[in-house]
Image (tube, rainbow, N blue to C red; front, side, top):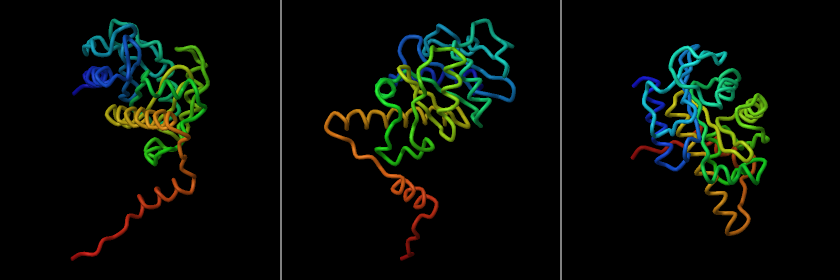
Amino acid sequence: MTFREQLCEYGRRAVELGLVIGTSGNLSVRDGDRIAVTPSGVALDKLTPEMCPIVDTAGRLVEGDLRPSSETPMHLAVYESTDAQAVVHTHSVFGTVVATTMTELPPVHYNTLLLGGVVRVAPYATYGTPELAENVRAALEGRRAALMANHGGVTIGATLEEAFEATRVLEWLCEVYVRAAGIGTPAVLTDAQLAAVVERTLNPPEFPRA
């Protein structure tokens, strides 16, 4: 499957899972100095491979007829400052709820570690601007996911599949927190408890053979 075909496939999945509505959200995947990105103004479940433009690392259009996503500057900033090979940006419901009310997503479950640690909320800035790109870059430092205040979420990965799975984990964590907060005050895991999970993952117990 080509990178452009991957954008179509995961764009369709994002719509099916309710992670985006209308023409919101955008995805990209990198191949060296070439970055395939979803186009501006096209619903992600309506994409065809030839619709997806390709830009270079400076944001110059090198292939395709449609205008790249307005969030391309953010994608480029992420590629410049991380080891990401794919970026997924969505406007998921629970992620956006948390992003409008919190400065970070509290670690209510150890799956937080799958995203590199406590998920930060990047300060609000107008979409498509250098300010937003810089805010997201800072929020992603040492992480695989970040939320964007009053906006949505962004995740990264070594592949588009990995970045998309991080998006699913992020939305699940946000939903758990929001639903828990509707019942009472969610219990938050301590640094020590999270460190214990890391230790157990790195050194799983051995089971004796029968």
